[in-house]
Amino acid sequence: MDFFKEYKDKLMTAEDAVKVVKNGDWIDYATSNSFPVTLDKALAKRKNELEDIKIRGYLTLEPIATVESDPERAVFTYNSWHCGGYERKLVDKGLCNYIPMIFRNIEEYYKRYLTVNVAMMAVAPMDHHGYFNFSVTTAGAKAALDKADIVILEVNSKLPKVFGGFDNCIHISEVDIVVEGENRKPLELSSPPSTDTDDIIARTIVNNMCDGSVLQIGIGGLPNAVGKMIAQSDLKNLGVHTELLVDAYLDMYKAGNLTNKQKTIDKNKGVFGFALGSSELYDWITENPGMITAPISYVNSPRVISQLDNFVSINNCISVDLYGQICAESAATRHISGTGGQLDFLTGAFDSKNGKSFICMTSSYKDKNGNLLSRFTPTFNGDIVTDPRSQSFLLVTEYGMINLAGLSTWERAEKLISLAHPSHRDYLIKAAEKQNIWRLSNKK
Image (tube, rainbow, N blue to C red; front, side, top):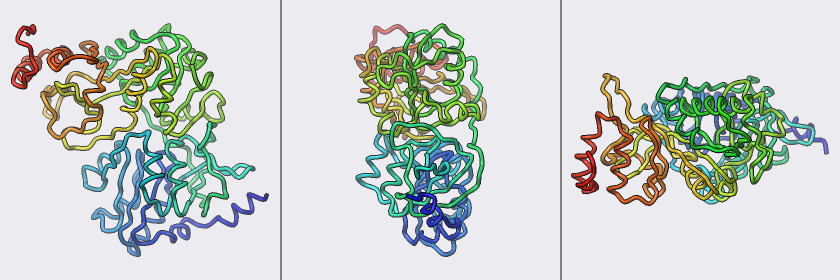
């Protein structure tokens, strides 16, 4: 078959492509480096022609033209599965609404419940077999494209091709419209530098790891500290099975710690859902048979994770209450990020042979006025519970590590307060006493 003829038959300008959008439609944009920049700009120009256009996206790294063109949300209503820094600012302005989800379920949401009138995604160029590669953002892309009434692909010749096991590409026969968009390299995302406190927390984690551990870590200063500390350690034959691939893994690989040789499944292959980082990270995974991408329904599945012995999950949180409830997505009612895969990996690590799931945070932080505030709170007041107290286990701050598994409410309160900043402990003890979760014989 002549796939390139089919390609040419479906090729049109972005302005013509977005004419398929009609009043009341639900539009899906792909995440991060697969965000359809050219199509979004073209759709924004139709603002005065359209009504009630709902858009879904997540972890968008740059301004969204449809949103920026409509600050009153008269036409475009943007919604996010998981907010990064830019989308968080949109939430603060009332220009973005969060869609609650546990990441492993996103594909089933599309299959069972959601309407997608038009799906738009930036992809790598078509190969001679007629396939477009999803590059560094497989995640939940295929499910959204499969559910869409109309599929529009925006080809970016600078997006690298990344190998995958399944659902990391789409065939021209499944595509309705092709647009040749802006050819630009994947956007880079640098992790903030680690602090001395991050290094203390990272050291505790690394000291509780073993050779052959399979890792999932998030993004930020702390994961960066963990990666660098592992790279300087004697840990051997580590593996990768992670929702998000970041530069910390590259540091481990370059140091020789990361081999994937001892993984009990997907042996000799690092597995990830999508990647965000430096150009060097993208170069590392380009057409690399040792690093493959897979859909989130596989990567984040506790059933899959449980088959990986010595699985280690490392994630941040924002606050913890004295019952052991963990918040990783809001500050009171102010939305910050999302549930993402934290609960997925916490659950899977618990079921893994010798698995461990570390939830980490600094014990305190300073507000804009310089006041030192605790990340431990007596009870939540509007904060979103990411991990229920029934699934809170290993918690780490700069004051040590505790395990909440099997502990009663008074035992939990005692352990949790031991991780708080010393200047906040008396207040927390008094709160625990008032809440009847403090044993009078406990040491103060």
